[in-house]
Amino acid sequence: MRKLLLPFSSLYWLCVVVRNWFFDIGILKTEKVSVPVISVGNISAGGVGKTPFVELLVERFKDSLHSAVVSRGYKRKTTGTVVVSDGRTIQSSVENSGDEPMQLARTYPELIVVVDENRVRGARKAVGLGAKVILLDDGFQHRYLHHDLDIVILTAEEILNGDFLLPAGNRREPLTSLNRADLIAVTRCADTEEFMRVCAMGLENRLLPANIPAIGLTTKLKAFKLFSSGEIIECDTVAGKNVVAFSGIGNPKSFEDLLRKANLRVVKHVAFSDHHWYKNSDFKTIVKIRKFAHADFIVTTEKDMARLGERFPEFLETEPVIVAEIRQEVLSGEQTLNELLGRIY
Image (cartoon, rainbow, N blue to C red; front, top):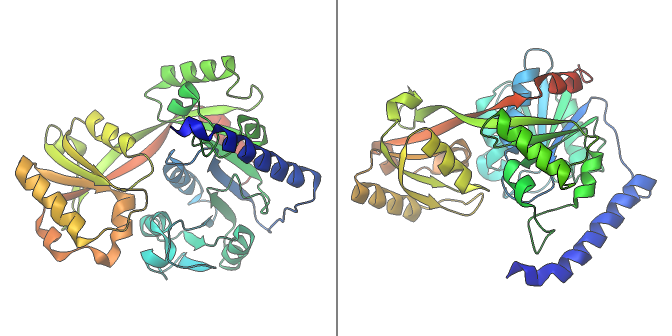
């Protein structure tokens, strides 16, 4: 049915092309800040694995530079500049900051996290807090702030299957925009062989530019954390167990696939809309499903847990709720990534 919207996609394409051209010729101005800015973005709506890659970069910089993450804070209940963390203490609530910024602030207490729909203003605030490098989350389309390094995330699936521009498809920019990138990171690759096959097909079908380097990434489960106590549970401990999953993320299928690859038996996955704000009735339904299915655990994502904050209902403390902690690993292109990051520090 969305193909009926193709005429509107043509109009959307025209608007995007003209806007980018205005930036290219200087009608729309780009501003620099006093520290390097690394943009991590995409050209498609929905979850592609940006936040895990931002976490990978935070890990790379944490021993050498005081880094900051600046993002819009999607679906937050505020506008303007909000300091989520000054690198010492958390200074906001999840409602005021958004789920992904709060997740990052809780995972990395030393990280500066600022949300602002105006990325230039947000970046300046981060610099004022002591940031020496800024990671711009979902920044590819935000060209008012100068990017010293542009990294674009694509999933293996979207390269193989292709897509249309909004609103007929999920693509936010035409493929020609990839020529602005310094690096393409291909996520959700099963192994190096799949990454090479995806790249070869992307080049053959002219979906990927031949002059932009690419690296391959895979997402793995690191461990689980028991909500009630914070106890870390190794993946082997829950392998073979029956679980009920719930999530409100951009790509719920990728979460379910990850659980199944870890040999969990997903008897039911209750998928909500991305950035869903949970109500007690949602959890009562989930608990009923677990009891009816005699499942061993209820499992969710770190992003969903960050969104709950103090709104987590007390009755769930007696339920076997575990949180999946994930990490992103570089399958191919480690040297390429290191060389590009070497320009920054």
